[in-house]
Image 1 (tube, helix red, strand yellow):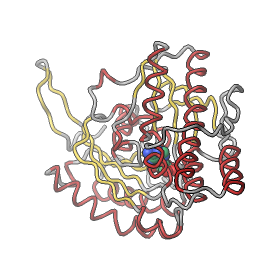
Image 2: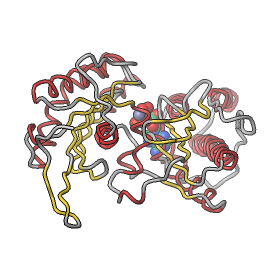
Image 3: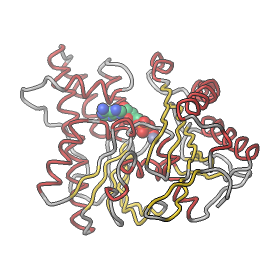
Image 4: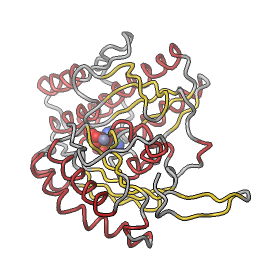
Length: 347
Ligand code: KG4
Ligand code: ZN
């Protein structure tokens, strides 16, 4: 661990150094830059969303996304430093997402991080995007509120749907994952099929809010089998229903609500079964889809009713961000797991 940088404070009579880490996230369509102190206190978190740029295409266009990261990164970094009253030499380490994600997008973040670490003579830390999402319930919370190890984590995003047994922050044992579409991808594709726009998750959530009628019973694939998920069948069932029914506005609301209910039903039931069978009493919900209010409510209510403690990130940390990268990096730094300038994107 380097001796330069950081600041010292007195706690219980002993000198304690605080570690300020810069986190850079460019794996998909959100550019994130953040600074955390000691792994959990977020003192700046800047995210530039590219939703408006990709909206006309109905999905993320990788080439456009990498160009936007190039334009966004330095202004975000300057704003982060300005609002924390820090200058670059005050940072103790530079952390960056190296994968998984879109190759061109990852390279933008990795290149900047390497240049900063080299120029400043600071440690460089490569962060796995999925491990960073799993870390999010810790951010802005007291350290003693963190889920203890091992715990169960349900990661739900546009690119991933997986259940992990979290042994420690850098050791995730995969219990199951989607065999086809990620759940966020299913939200996005169903919204597109209904002509509702992009990204589908928040649009479907909003549209479904007003529904109080009779549900359409869409399929719940693999509900009682293993820990793997499958959302492509559910999505296809919605598309087939659309072809047969030519829905009016009320019927579209009913479809969105029924689709969302089926997806949540599968996610919650399988997660709670995994917790039962694995003997894990703490469950976290992370990733872009963890911003979904009905999913948060269902997992919390059904989980607590069965005696589990549910850990949710603040919604601003559900979407991709630099704070989860910087926060998790503290643990890599403590273990001496540093990268060198050969760090490359691993899509
Ligand atoms: O984690 P994230 O920001 O990026 C990836 O790594 O994929 O997740 C983006 C996904 C998109 O599919 C988006 O539709 C979904 O998260 N999402 C939601 C909600 N907010 C974002 N899905 C359901 N309900 C929401 N409120
Ligand atoms: Zn993500």
